[in-house]
Image (cartoon, rainbow, N blue to C red):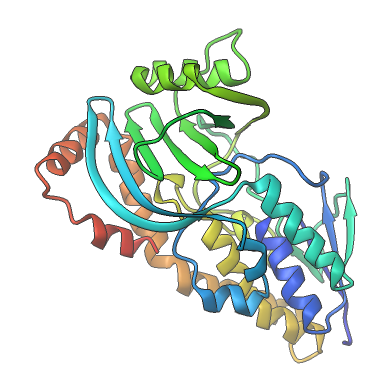
Length: 332
C-alpha cells in the first residue's frame, strides 16, 4: 500500500473499519482515548445488520457469543402498548469491543490506547459524537436477577426513554436517555432509578431496585445531539451521524458506516483517490444509506418526547392502529 491510514477512535466503527482495512493489506494505526475493556453508554442491542455487512468487515465471529433476541415490547407509564418481533443480538460493549480489538491486533494492526490524535489528512475520524450544548443525559448499567417480560423491553415517557435488553451471561443491559435535570446527590444506579421516577416510570424503578445492579458497569454521557454531526471531512460512526436511540439501530449504523468507508479508504491507501475524494465518497455513501432512517427516526423522536405526541401515539398503539413493522423497516 502506498499510504498508511490512521483511525481516531476505537469504538465499533473504528475497530470494524480497522479490521476490514488491515485484512486487505492496508497499514492501519488506531488511536483509542481509553483502554479495553470498558463500559460505554449503549443499548447493546444489534438489530438489522446483514450477514453480508459482517462478512465484508470480517467481524462475524465476534458476534458468535451474542445472545439471540426475538421478542420485544413497547410500554409507556400506563403499561404495555404493543408486543412485536424485533430479531437482534444482545452483547455488552465490554465484551464486543474487547473481541474486536483482539481481532484487529491479530491481523497486525497497530493499536495505541490512552491516545488522542488531531484531525488531519489520512486520519479517519471515529472518535464519537462531538460535544455540544444539550439537555440530554444518557445512563447505562448492567443487572442480574432482573426478570424481563420480553427479550427487549422499551419504555417511553415525556421525560425520556429507556430500553432493557438481554445480553451475555444472564445479564440485562439497562440504558436510558433523559431530558429532565438529574437530582442532586444521586449517583450510580440510584441516579438511574431517580431519573426513572422523575419520568413517571415508577414501576420500572421498583424492578431495578429489586435487581442486583453491577455498579461498576454504570456510566453516563451528556452534551450531545442526535442527527448529523459536524466533524472533520472523513467521519464514521457517531462522529458522522447519531440516530435517536429508541430505534435500536445505532450499533448497526456503526458497522454500516465502516462498510461505507471501506472502499474509499482503500482507494486512498492505494493511491487511486486523493484524501478529499475518498472522504467525499464515504460521506456520500453514508448519506445515501442513512438518509431515510435518520429522517424517520428524527420525526419519531420528536413525537415521542412531546407530551401531546406521546399521548396520541400511545392511544393509537393501544387501539392497534400503528403499523409497527412498517416503522421498524423504515429505520433499518
